[in-house]
Amino acid sequence: MLKAQLEYIRSKTDIVPEIAIVLGSGLGELADKIDIKCIIDYRNIEGFPISTAPSHRGRFVFGEMEGKKVVLMQGRVHLYEGYSAKHIAFPIRLMRLMGAKKLILTNAAGGINKDLKPGDFMMISDHISCFVDSPLIGKNIDFLGNRFPDMSNAYDIELQKTIKEVAINNSIPLKKGVYCQLKGPQFETPAEIKMISALGADAVGMSTAIETIAAVHCGFKVCAISLITNYACGILDKKLSGEEVVETADSVSQNFEKLIKEIVKSI
Ligand code: HPA
Image (cartoon, protein in one colour):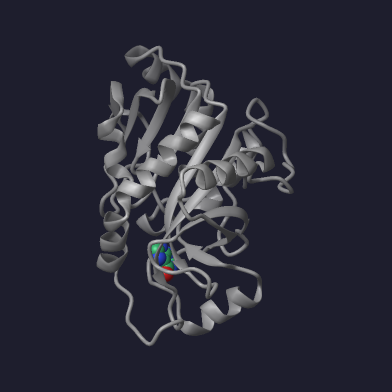
């Protein structure tokens, strides 16, 4: 399947991207601002999962950003759309097979740690993925990676260092913390947030840890930034909504775009 998918991509473009980026909420527009060379809709790739989440377009955008060849995922897929962890791995693996070596993941997340407020950026230093399936369950695909990949440096230490410097040099406040992925689509209960807080989570979301696992397995150097769109459930006496997530994401999208562009320039 992966080989056929790669052949399809190669029939459309021969670009070998250096960096792959998954655009989460608030960043979708970034794809329209790069020097675009080619666009491929997921729905034209055989066996590919199609994004149904709000503000997720569902296509690969190839082009140049800050002088570097990139492939962007304008829209990702989530477990809550009915896809398995394996489906979620497809686009990540495909971008690696296209030749990308570094992966920047972005997402919207709820802030649990009291230091995090809506509009903040949090560089992910580690994750808790044990509430969701691994994308590596099933027969190992040996040409991608080994059966038992090490996760001790899942978020590459060197990339983290560079990102920290980029944020300081551009006066963009950047927090750092542990991301916990849950399945969704319902937001968490206060008891669930209390539980994952006790386990060490600083932020909670519904996407990224599975992608990181698939990416580490196939040899990507991974970094990830969460945009904190809301206080997690129970932190404030206030109801959560998907609209709030999208609104906050949109309100800081310019700064988020700047941070990502500067990261691309520097890594
Ligand atoms: N919980 C889970 N996922 C999220 C949240 C949240 O509070 N905010 C944005 N994505």
